[in-house]
View (spheres, rainbow, N blue to C red):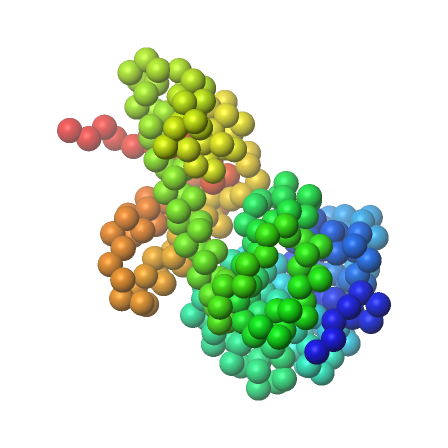
Length: 299
C-alpha cells in the first residue's frame, strides 16, 4: 500500500467548518485534493485555497487512492460511501477511506466490513481541537483500524494534526472521540454551574476562572471557553450544540452497547438533549450556560 504526495489523489467530502480548513491544509502541504460540498460558498472557499472543486462526490472520488469524509454523522458517511450515489465504486483499487467525522463506533465496524468486500480499507480518524486547530494543523487525531493502512496514511494525517494516536481496531477512534466529548461536555457543564453559583454568592466569574486554572478544577473549558465565550455570553466557539448532543448520545449508546452502567453519562446526554431542544441546532455548544440559566431552582 503506497500513499504519497506525488502519486495519490485525495477526495475530500465535506467542506464545512472543520472540513474546509482541513482540506485546505492538505492542499498547502502539496497533496492533490478534489473536494466536494453541496454548499456553493464552501466550494468557492476551497477553490480560493487552491483546491480542485468537483461537481459531485463521485466526480471527486474518481480514481482517488484516498477518500476523506468530514460529514455530520455516520449515516451521512455511509450514504456518501455506499449509498445509491456513493463513491466506493469510483475509487482506485485498494483505496483507503478515512472517516474523520464523529460517527457511531458500532456503525463504523459494520461499514468497514461492507467496504472490505469491495477491497476498500476503512479507517476511523476523528479529530479534536476545533476550528482554530484545524486551521493551524494541530488537531488531535484518533485513528482506529488496520495498522498497515494507518501507517500508509500517516504522512497525510501529519499535515492535519500535531498529535496522532492509534487507538486500536476499526471503530475505536470513534469510540474515543465520543468519550472525549462526553468528558468535555461534563466539564463545561460543571464549570458553568460553578460560575453561576459563585456569581450569585458574590464571587467574580473571571477571578473564579483564574483560580480554577491554577487549581484542581482546571479543564479545557476553564482554560479556553469560559473567558472568551461563557462569561461575556458571546457563545461563539464554532462548535454547535447539535454536534455535541449527538456525540453525547453516541457515548451513552456505547455504554449501553457494552453493558456498562454510566449514570453520569446518561444524565449529561439527557441534559444536553434538553438544551438542544430548547435552543435549537444552530446554537453554539457554549450556550449550555444560557440553558442552565433557564432551569428552575430546585428546593
